[in-house]
Amino acid sequence: MTQRRPLIAGNWKMNCLRADGLELVSALVAKAAEKGSLGCDVLVCPPATLLSDVVNAAQNSAVQVGGQDCHAETSGAHTGDVAAAMLADIGASYVLVGHSERRADHDESSTVIRQKAIAAHDAGLIAVVCVGETEQERDLGATLPVVNGQVAVSVPDGASAKNTVIAYEPVWAIGTGRTASVAEVAEVHAAIRAELVERFEDGDEFRILYGGSVKPSNAAELLAVADVDGALVGGASLKVDDFWKIIETCA
Ligand code: PEP
Image (cartoon, rainbow, N blue to C red):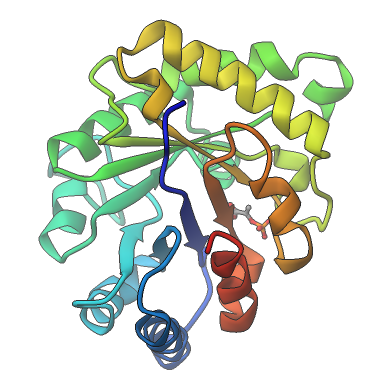
């Protein structure tokens, strides 16, 4: 069976002023240094304003840094947006694309998300492509077709396990305190894995993260599910002790 190194990724969303962000990343860097070897890769995705500071604070540490979004174009008249090459230029190595909050707040379609993932790859970044069903879609029994459809369109043909991570995040579990059950997570991750294996030569090597109210108390059981190769963590990534406990679950 393919061994996949887990990835624990923190999505800070639109939180943290400079001092808070620096305190958070510095504490994480210190814990990682004290521990030495970690059982997973660690990523933090701060808001764009803090990327440069966080990259500097995390230099030569086990903590990698990513953007929360990028534009599909390389440059131009896109006020307020950030190009993937700009993220790479300041030292980010990952970028989230297609987070459900972007899909909902900015009307982003899976087609746009595929273009963003391609832009990320072209800039040398690893794209974390987020997918997940709404509560209404789950209630209608449409979870698998919705999620498989999002993966089919959002993940570009040029994707590989080296440049792409999938994050399954049921929308109804994000920031709500509700978590998908182990059986629900297992079913969706298996369906995503089957789709990746059918489409990509290295489909078995892609990391598939679970996200949605992951916290220290549920991380171990979620991370033990087959085909769960890490977590995308929102709220709990803002508290260094909680985020660290989730990281330690992979030790
Ligand atoms: C997220 O923002 O991707 C997320 C999963 O948030 P939370 O952990 O707070 O549900």
